[in-house]
Length: 251
Ligand code: PEP
Image 1 (cartoon, helix red, strand yellow):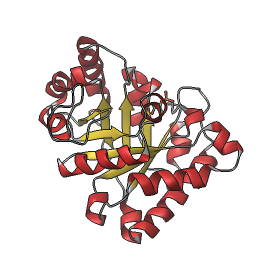
Image 2 (cartoon, helix red, strand yellow):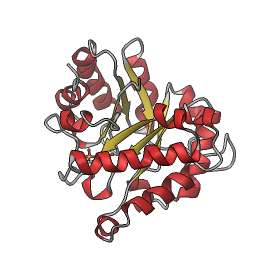
Image 3 (cartoon, helix red, strand yellow):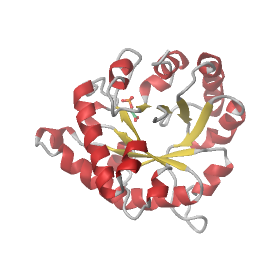
Image 4 (cartoon, protein in one colour):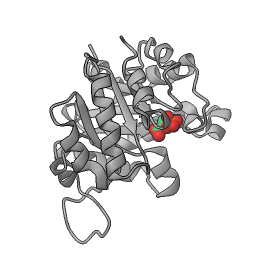
């Protein structure tokens, strides 16, 4: 049984105060959501204050990125152990916006993922094809390259700390969701690939999230598909009501 994950990526939105208000509104709305892991990913500056606000609730904390070194002369970076220290249990790595605007590659995704796991964090590793790649029928080869590169050198044990997020870039923030069938066919492809790269029981256990314009009115259809184990949510995670409605897909 894979426990579903609903994760909210707040991107570059909200001050510390606004972040605390959002989780304070969210907590009572999701307090009775059992059997689902609920995660929020605020900006770095809000992490530890949001952690204080969610302590004792059923909401977990994620960061949106990290560096791979433990410490050193790396101005502007944040190390995995510093995220642990701030209360994070998860970190998102390889989001398409980081790939698109900040030079993230499969190699840096791989280094960050390994370092985060070594520091005791769980990692949400993001993959996804561009619209042009889908139109050229390259979706599966792009995803295969990203997964092989991102997860290279990890062990089966490491994979127990990895959640994969399939986020077609053309569906992020555009209001265009992949159809349930389009998402499912990529998810099963990823699961079969993980079986080949690791083993079938790792593949059975790994949670694969869909991301790309997930909203309260499309989450149920997506979650009904056998290989979709949750959602990584951007825009709709910025309001307590809509994020709670998504996190309550099973009630
Ligand atoms: C995301 O940021 O990962 C995302 C899926 O955004 P949105 O839900 O707004 O498409």
